[in-house]
Length: 107
Image (cartoon, rainbow, N blue to C red; front, side, top):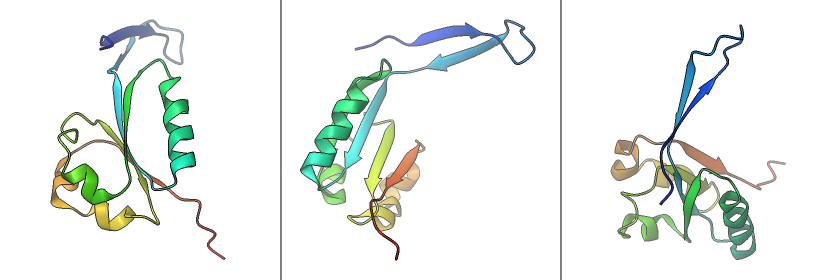
């Protein structure tokens, strides 16, 4: 497991008083396109602050898994479960960042 980090950074005036606290990211990726899902998971794992990426193929799968408590960032396929999944009580109560993915052509 990666360690928590605390970094001193310069603010916009050049003062060294801004601290950035980062924790290792554990992504939950809900995507049924296997090629895209694997590519995105591989790209996320290249990031220094990524600890792991759990891949799921539907919302029900993540809700029934024991991994949901570990996840601190969700990536959700809009066309697959998107808004319906994000409206689930368990997900609303999980106060973490959520990003909706879409490759849908709106035309």
